[in-house]
Length: 243
Image (cartoon, rainbow, N blue to C red; front, side, top):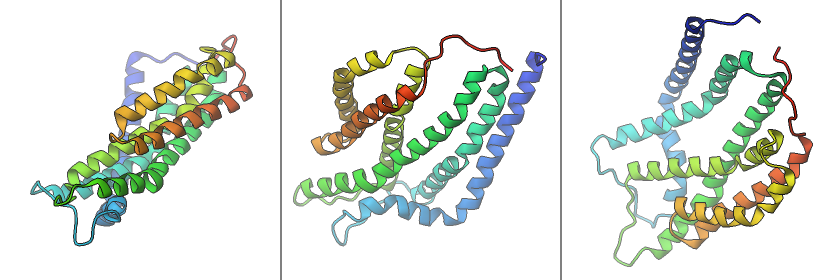
């Protein structure tokens, strides 16, 4: 394989970026007619927990327009994510070793799948529990009228948090595969992982024990899942020659 010059690398990088942005933009434009429906879907967990005759509010004049647009952009990003990761792979693949190339596809596929599982877990299980709890503890005389922009920020943050949490098995497998930590060392780290899981949950989730537990428990379980599957991947001893 002939070595590319710096200029050729930059041209290739620009081409990959153009394709990535183009697919993202096309996905966004295709989804824009459904922006209101997408926002309704995202808002459903909170709307189902609000008292009757109560709704969300918009404190910003342009929020009713821009919040659905933000939801549509997020959806377009998620839908185009496999293509984006492929473009990244196509750019870095020529410089990878053979064993790295064999690992990258299942790694990328499983990462996308687990991130989507984390978002689904947050949407279908965590959000209803959290919002019902918050609705019950709302003081008498206080209307639980949440601003739609702040709600979206909260939802996006929780999606990212739970999506990242569900990547724990991938991290464990990579640590074992790359020889950073042995399986025995990873098993001995269990007590620290348990404490760290509750610390992370306390920082990210709302300040109630229920929602913190809903994040900490899956993190611990997923760590154990990583330990279960890690022996299937032998640690890399010596790098092979690149193709």
